[in-house]
Image 1 (cartoon, protein in one colour):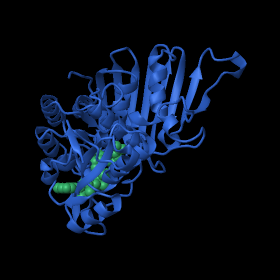
Image 2 (image 1 turned 90 degrees about the vertical axis):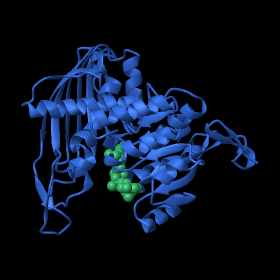
Image 3 (image 1 turned 135 degrees about the vertical axis):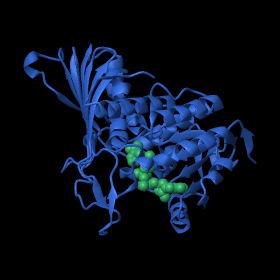
Length: 400
Ligand SMILES: NC(=O)c1ccc[n+]([C@@H]2O[C@H](COP(=O)([O-])OP(=O)(O)OC[C@H]3O[C@@H](n4cnc5c(N)ncnc54)[C@H](O)[C@@H]3O)[C@@H](O)[C@H]2O)c1
């Protein structure tokens, strides 16, 4: 016998976990992010026990009936639909998860908020600051929990970096230097995809990769006062489909660089590209402060390089490679004994657990999780970088 309590259903879980509520989930999109999020929901009760609520994979939406039916079977959803609106009106769904392309964030999330669903939406929140602002205003008004899926906030080493900065271990922050480097479209014969179409994606490397490091800049250092930026499209035409002689126009950036003048006086540089031949998914930053430095690379995500100016005798000082896998490191007590490392997909377990705890215990998503307000602020900075580039790299003040 189950009983509805607020947004969650008590007593759905059978056996000794019968007093743990379950929470219904509907996911839009079954490809890259749909798969990563589905995995996060499934792993959550296995890792965070007892969970605040056990995710129940109610329904998944996609365009192709056969493909979405297969995804439902493979990921363990009870049902599927080819119309995302079915998720929004489904009374058994309490969390609407938007893992669709960027042009499919605003309308579904706004409809879901209007229907009282809690929401996790992939980044970039909207295609522009204006679209993102509208999304943020609607969720705020609806009073639902909302998170923009900046999952790198949930890497243990990055959360540890934030805690060290909060504790003052680095002293005054002077520099934030971040690069997000991929290579997947360096071949001019790589065919057009939605990520290269401005109507669908909003922007290119900027909103896709840049959004992550802009969010990390705000998460780790603080708000920017102004930016200067340059964006570049190296290959302006590509095969419309793989092997086709027909051409399609690329109207988003392939790469960008930006200077960041932070409110707290720190100086930042940001760079993202899909043309860094040899680089697969190198999301890396270094922070230098008056008392020390931190360095991180996603391709070594269990490690945080730390240098503290006063640690030990001066003869022995230098960067130390800290393996962030001790029970006292963020998130780690739920995982394995020290040194038994975790992976990229586990950031989604942490992120989703954070959302579900916020829903069940009525806790804020911020400051450790990203809200739609963070998604909006990131979009303002992206738009400012584009505006700067259009004006030859001129300084553009950031105003929310
Ligand atoms: N957090 C991260 O690290 C990360 C990584 C990759 C992508 N993303 C973001 O996740 C989102 C999705 O990207 P992806 O890589 O999964 O894209 P993808 O192309 O792999 O998948 C998009 C999915 O949306 C579905 N879809 C498209 N139109 C639809 C419609 N009208 N109705 C229902 N479903 C529809 C497609 O069928 C597909 O399942 C994007 O916003 C992207 O920026 C985030």
